[in-house]
Length: 202
Image 1 (cartoon, one colour):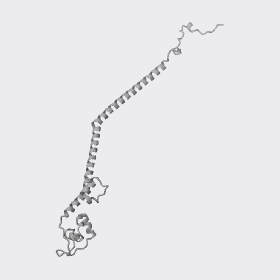
Image 2: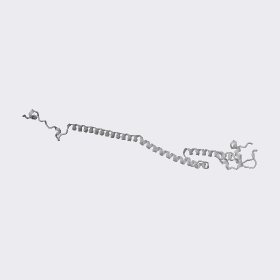
Image 3: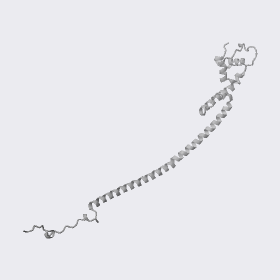
Image 4: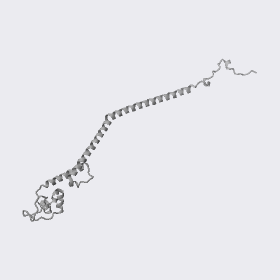
């Protein structure tokens, strides 16, 4: 009985297969090496992008800082200095105006009694001007002829009668000097120089 044995590789002329490099622990498979190399290149590219972006941002910020500094030195600081200078001038003007207003009020005496204490600025200037005009009018009115007092009437005029409250108020506002005269003289002045509604008809 003949034995059926398979021919060995050496017998058939086939070379014994060489051991694969995959089984060698000292080597890395090509696929893994290629994958790792691609990952490393991607990371290096990303790192380069980040470094470039950081560099560009740093340069942009430096440029902006330079521009802001230049803008501040050419426009901002001069404008701030001018605003400070103008504020100082306004304060000096208001201080001087307040001193003038106080002086005018004092010169007006009783004519300034009707001006409230809380009024300031342009409104106070207007009120002082009105009071000064009233005082000037009153002082010029005091040069009007004064009829001497005496018994009886002069020039056939009717005897003096009492001055009404309306007439007294008119004299307080326009002819305050008349209020110092006796009532019969006030009546004569009203008849001669007062408003038409205050003059007695003959």
